[in-house]
Amino acid sequence: MRAYRLQDLGSPSALRRQEEDPPQPGHGQALVKVHARSINFRDLLIQQQRYAVPARPSVVPLSDGAGEVVEVGPGVTGLRVGDRVTACYFPKWQAGSLEMPMALDQFGCTRDGMLADYVVAEAAALVPAPEHLSFEQACTLPCAALTAWSALTGGRPIAPGQTVLTIGTGGVALFAVQFAKLFGARVVALTSGAHKAARLRTLGADEVIDRQLHPQWASEVRRLTHGAGVDHVVETGAIDSLPQSLAACAANAEVALVAALGQGSLDASALRGLVTIRRVFVGSRAAYEAMHRAITQHRLEPVIDRAFAFDEAHLAYQHFAEQRHVGKVVIADR
Ligand SMILES: NC(=O)c1ccc[n+]([C@@H]2O[C@H](COP(=O)([O-])OP(=O)(O)OC[C@H]3O[C@@H](n4cnc5c(N)ncnc54)[C@H](OP(=O)(O)O)[C@@H]3O)[C@@H](O)[C@H]2O)c1
View 1: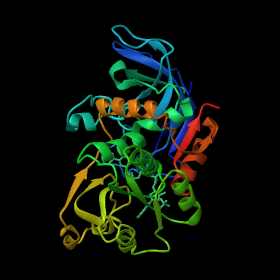
View 2: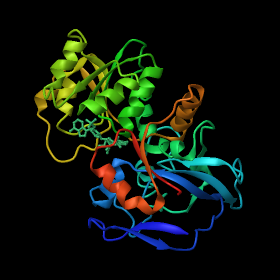
View 3: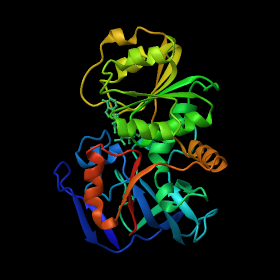
View 4: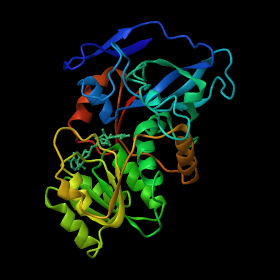
């Protein structure tokens, strides 16, 4: 089979392609023919050796993929050859709280991921893909969509008419816009540039702020909310956007802290408000299944910026790293 593996993490040419035998499913496992994968910010961090969880040497990258079960090992129940599936970001986190051993087990990091023709996964980590979605659409769900879902459903409930602030036009932020609209919220979306702003409006964002035109965008959020501030923030920016997110909050608002914060520090004065900060780590299988039900019910379609061919994986990484994308960057089977 075709596979990419990460060699010499940290080097620009870490992504290496090779031919190898497909893996074999063991007890309780299934073999999945992967038809499409998507890139997340963490995949760049892993390649650059900057991710919090150390990657296994020579690992097949990417947590997110969608495909078809082609073989099941002994002891597998509830999964059949031909099923269309995606894999859970944390294969061992079924429900409840995330525990450290579960967090340390991830596709495309500590175990082989999706940038190959086949992947082996335990049946408990595989979830049927929503029927109305193609493989290219379904492969965007495991990390970005579930993170947005957890950001909006895992804490303080959103009441219809409340205001949600989203940050950027990456995968997580666009799913957050789409889900927030499902919940009847008013969305204030932050972005950079007129083209991205226009795209956000077509997705249903009620107000869009261009942070290039409004570097002190928190005051613009306040203006657009008649001084009240927002009730929820899906914070996908970085350590430099967090103080403004907090300044944009209404009393008793909740900030779902999603972003990989990177280098920098936070001035304690940013924490003066009556605001709850809740850390989000993707989500459990139970949350993933709940999200699928909502996506299916509303026939929600992920926003795909561009799909690259398997041979163009390097270009897909480069395109993603340049941050010109709006939505998800996909590597398909072609
Ligand atoms: N905790 C978790 O479970 C989890 C899961 C998934 C992702 N994440 C993190 O969430 C973040 C977003 O992930 P993603 O996959 O959606 O990334 P992405 O596709 O790379 O999108 C990032 C977008 O955010 C905006 N942005 C970047 N830096 C910013 C800044 N300093 N201030 C304001 N906006 C900024 C840009 O959009 P515009 O040009 O439109 O402004 C950029 O395109 C990353 O930090 C990622 O590591 C965390």
